[in-house]
Amino acid sequence: MQYDYLVVGSGLFGAVFAQQAKARGKKVLVIDKRNNIAGNVYTEKIEGINVHVYGAHIFHTNLKHVWEYVTQFAEFNCFTNSPVANYKGELFSLPFNMYTFNKMWGVVTPEEAEAKIEEQKHEAGITEPLNLEEQAISLVGTDIYEKLIKGYTEKQWGRPCTELPAFIIKRLPVRLTFDNNYFNALYQGIPVGGYTKMVANMLEGIEVRLGVDYLENKEELDKLAEKVIYTGAIDAYFDYKLGNLEYRSVRFENEVLDKPNFQGNAAVNYTDPETPWTRIIEHKWFEFGKDEEGNDLPKTVISREYSSEWKVGDEPYYPVNDERNGKLYEGYKKLAEAESKVIFGGRLGEYKYYDMDAVIDSALKLVEKEL
Image (cartoon, rainbow, N blue to C red; front, top):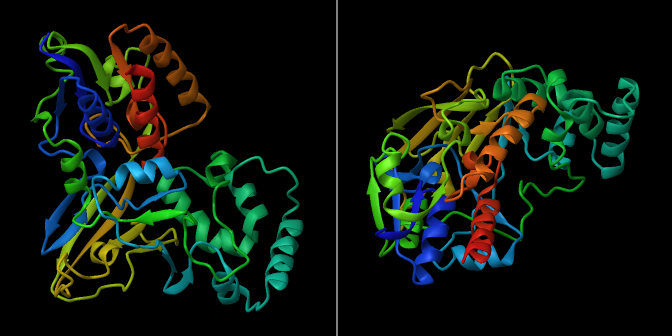
């Protein structure tokens, strides 16, 4: 055995575990089937702009120990996530706040906004929300649901809102203030220089092999290390023998534009059902339209996001956490627990929709338990 740990996947979970294991004197090998490190937080420089190749990633956390951990590897800017919703050319402020309610209903005070939501909730006759549609109406009323939630959510999940569980939207921020900071987290920002640079700093001094498919070379790779930290898809590890877990996937259409400003905001959600994409990201605004030296960038890069049903070969993004998939995952989890030298972690290894800070926290907890 040449290594104490073989870490499969160089995304946040794998990189954090590898960094911490090395800091504790362990010999670690990190492999990744992609030709780049950083998993889905990978950023690539195009026209001086750090483009979020696998979709927008905005770091936010209330966990002080996680913030103290990541800021060892990157300086963070003070970016605040304030998306805009575009419904057939009408623009609304997100998260739902007093600007949204004023634009939608002409109300001026929090009291008027609250009364309007209550009135619409009462008219809909919802007491105990049974699905996403009912949960959304009980939170923000029928008008906002119809214009700003229904179309977007059905494009995102590929299912009617009446078939989606209520819990998906329970964490939706609704504010009776003019605060349009989406995350309301104590710590928030984007790493200066991009996420790839941050992950490269985590993996400094650790052997990394790219373009290596673990599942295709499992037998020989397993011989290299005492233990394996596996961050790939749990069902793929077991060759889908209990059946496929379902995911939603995302396709990106990128465009470099010969202009300094396309939409004036990092994220604009298209909430009508007719527009085929869910949102447009304009990457330069994550870093205030400037490069690392503080110069204005003359061009801009946009990404249109299209949500789709996942099939083998696609990039899995969001686990479909419904009853069927929950039961199927429990079956795979039992198989995983029986693997003596493999530890499953991260979004795909645990079939869990994780925010970045939760992934890091989970990896740090594993380090404490394991080392």
